[in-house]
Amino acid sequence: MEFGLQFFPDVGPEEKSGQQYWNECLSLVDLCDELGFTQVRTVEHYFEPYGGYSPSPHVFLTAASQRSTKARLLTGAVSPVFNHPLKIAGEIGMLDAISNGRLDCGFGRAFLPHEFQRFGRTMDESRARFDEGVEAVRRLLEEENVTFNGEFHRFNNVTSLPRPTQQPRPPFWVAALGTPQSMQSAGENGYNLMLVPFAGPQMREAIGLYREAWRQAGHPGNGRIALGFHMFCHQDREEAHRIAKPNINAYFKSLVAAAEQDSGWGAGTSSRDYPGYDGHLDKLRAANFDSLLNGGTIWVGTPEDVRQQISGYAREVGGFDTASLQVNFHLVSASDAAASMRLFSQEVIPAFQ
Image 1 (tube, rainbow, N blue to C red):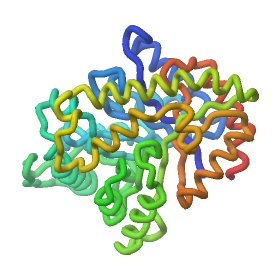
Image 2: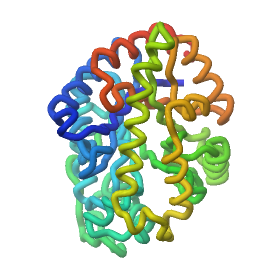
Image 3: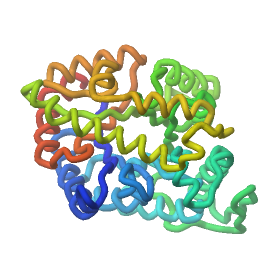
């Protein structure tokens, strides 16, 4: 198993400026090569404290590429529904060049109603826009003189520049919450998979669907799966809980607030492309530090605690390849996050290598 860092801001200007937040993140990226963290990842979200400091993953990952010379850089994830494929493809080529071929391209459908509303998009077009956008980007990266006639995007005889450093293109990843169709589609297309354990409790089933679809499509191997976790490691269990608990609870409070921002849709109006959304939201409302710790979907405690939490969860879901760790969630300080990373590197990572 490999371990990487995931930066997912959940603060607003009254708590921490964007300047402070991102400079703290870069100070943690500085530790990756020394401590053995092999991936750096960030998200695309807008407007609200939950994710709003990260409207452009490519911008942060470009900076991160200059602070670590080894870690892979994963967009976790770019949303085609809010971006033109010509722009996405050009930025991918540029970042792949700047990072000397270390970019992994993650794509997601987006899931927050307020973002769709503010961009003037309907959630019922989410899947169609996602599928079309990813296919357009794939062709622009793999081919030259591309002509594309889709439902949402049309262009003629385009060669995207810069051409990808990795050939034929960087690896593609798909972010999913738990919809079976998303798992199967990722496997069929030969794309790697990003999942969030706290958002979809049936992880074993989801991973099984993905791997079966991968095999049925005839792709070699089993694909790659990255799961995201909040992690805080400390020699003293009580101190680990004291620091992590209020920040975990605040993170989920900001998530629910963002999901409820559109009061009409979030209150129960159905969406064709997001069946079961209300059920997911109910689970998030009920989530708290204790329930998440008991469920194995956050990793907090002493090194021995964390080793057991990782082993137990990996057995429960049938294994995965990468744990993307949020280490500076909400107001966890950069110094506390760095100390947690060092301890995790010394006493946890070796057990999984």
